[in-house]
Structure formats: structure tokens, C-alpha cells
Amino acid sequence: MSSIRHYLSIATPLDKLLVLLASLLVFIDWGNGLLWHTFGSSFGFSASIKLLLLLLLIYRGWQLNRQALHWPLSLMLLMLPGPLYVLWLTGHHYGLADLQLISKSAALLVALAYFSELARQQPQAFLRWLDGVFAASFLLLFVNSLLGLAGYGGTAYQPMDEVAQPFLGVKGFFISTNELSGLLLVLSCWLLVRSWQALRWFYPLLSLAALSIAALLLTKTGLFGVLLLVLLIPILLTPRAYFYAKRQWLLGLSAIILGLLMLLLWNLSSVLQWVGIYDKLQFAYQQRGIMGIILSSRDYYLQRNFTLVAERYPEWLQLFGVGQGGLRLHLKKYFIELDLFDLLLFYGLAGGLLFALSFWRVFGLSAGALKKASAAGPVLLLNSLLLLVALLAGHVLTSGMLWLPWALINAALLAQQALPRALALTLLQTETGAADERSA
Image (cartoon, rainbow, N blue to C red; front, side):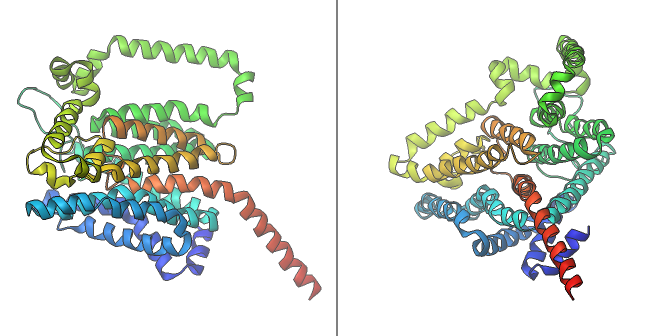
């Protein structure tokens, strides 16, 4: 903690405020849900704080790393003309919703620009701070699940008339189940990495806790994503020489794991019935086949929404997007819940470019750090999972809960790369100071 106190002692008041707000953001989302479940409204609690944080990040990030902000800010401006034209044309006031979604979609790159500089300048302080923030946030998710099991907060899903589902999942006092699943992936990835590196005996307990939270959420994203992280992170963090030396033992272990997986698949229907989602998945399969299970009918909404926009709006406007208002005029469910296609419909080519740029930057950062940062492999795996989720389930780039932790875990790779150099500089400064004292 001494390095964190040292950083805060030399940081500007604005940097201190940004670090404080970033530390509390998951707790703010939880408080936002608490207000919503208690009073039926959150009174804009979380939205106002996130807006303040985002504006401050843009201001401070422009001072420290303006080159990284040129494209995100330009694309945000290019995403406005289409929705504003539809707003002027129809008179329906959906502009605020578009501003919120544009801000959420660009927030990852904005936060990454600022926290990348923070990670480079104070790598040791940044990593210790990140450990504390993620550990506290994960603990909150765990306690929130326990409260949900005790009957507090909301269920993950609403009951369906067509399906008699015995268990509707637990989301506690958070509002969005899908966004909570993405947050769980990010927090679990970093804590599993740190546990395997420094506290290996704790890894099974942490894995069990993460899998339990995911199982209670009843999302495919959370359950399969966390399971992949738990299984693959030890492999990604183990040197290749170890695999060669222990190849016979590892082959035996692999055979056991494969056998357990085969047993699980053989009894999959029983497991799904025990979890409580078998009837829902069976209904989805009967309605739309295997794609109904994978996409949860999003393929239907994709075709319907694109057809509607093509029929009702000119091609030049489709290049700029029709905003949320352009679809809300005709459809009750106007989100496809596939990030790329939602951004394309709402904000046209600029929305698609923002999606591509966001993943280009996180993939470039994690792939470029593979030989220099110990966590690069797991973070690259996480980014791959989030890309897959964004394309198949949504609520990744358009999530209001995910952008900051996602930016922090990618910025941490820059801190790991800068850490040896920072330690060398500290050592040099210590030796220089000692030499000065001797000469004096």
C-alpha cells in the first residue's frame, strides 16, 4: 500500500478524484440497483456519476495522451448526425438515450487512454491498486449473490408463460444480468491470474466462488466463460518446459478431465434440470433449433430490424444510422442485443468503426504484450471471449458496467511491461542517493 500512498501524495487532485471514482464504480452500480429495487427508480444516481467520470477522463486523458483520443472522440461526433436528423424529422425526443449509448460505447477507449498513462507512470502502484479494487468488487458480487439467494433483490430472468422454469436465477441488487456476467468475467480473469501466480492454494476456492456466481446468474456467457478461464489460465501461465517435463502426468490428468467432461455431457439434461434452465432451453430449441439456444432468438430480431430500416429509411441515412428513436417508432423491442449490429443500425458506419477500433486496440495491446507481461495470455483469452460474446449475446461494448474494469485489466499489461524498468529506475535513484550521502 505504500506505493499507492506515494502515488496519491504526488498526484494532482483530479487524478486522485479519478482513482477514487474508479475504485467505487462497481459499488456505485450496486447502489444504483439497490435504489431501483427499493424505490422503483435509481434517480439517475449511477448515470450522473459515470457521466462526470467520463468527462473528467476525457479532459485529463486529453492532457496526458491526446493521440489515443483522436479517433474515439471523432467517431462519437460522427455517430450523432443520423440520430439528430431522425429526431428533427419525427419530433420524438430520444436524443438523451442515444447520447448515453454513444458515451457507453466509446467509454472503453476513453478510459484506456487515461489509465494506460497511469499504468506506465506508476506501474507498481497501479497493479496494487487494481488488485485491491478487483478483490473488493468480486467480494461484493459474492455477497450480492448470497443476498439474492436469501430473497433480496431481483431474479436474473422474468417468468415465461410458455415455460415452467423452477429457478429464475439470482442477480441480487444489480439491474442487468447480462452486463453482470461480463463484469464477472473481467474480475475473475484478473483475480485467477494473481491467485495462480502468488496464492495458488486459493485458486480452487476462487474458481468455485466464480463458478457459483455464474451458475446463479443462469447466463451462458457467465457459466461457460468462467469455466474456460478456470481451465485455461493455469495452462497459459505455465512454462512450456514444465509441460514437457511432466508430460506423462499431464496426459493422465487430461484423460481424467476429458472423462469427467464426457460424463457431464452424457448427463447434460439432468444437470440442466438440476440447475433449473432445461425447460427454457428446450423451448428455445423447439422454436428455432440450435441457433435458438445459441442466439436466444437474436437472429430473428437481426433480420426483422435490418429489414424495417431498409424499408423505411433512405440508404444515405442508413450510412449515418437512424438512432434508437428510428426503431422505437415502430418496434417495442428495438435492440437486437448484438453489439456490432445494434451500433450499425443506430449509428451507421461510425458505430461499426467504433466497434472495430475498440477490439483492435485491446487485441493489439494484449497480443503485443505476450512476451513481456505475465498476464497477457489470459487477458488475450478474455478479450477473445468478450468479442465472441459481443457478436453472439451483446451487452459488452454497450455495457455501462463493463467498460472501466475492461480498460483497467488491459492497462495492467502496460504496467507489467513497465515494472522492470520502473524497478531499475528506483534502484538507480536509491544508489545515487546513497552515493550522495557518502560524498557528503
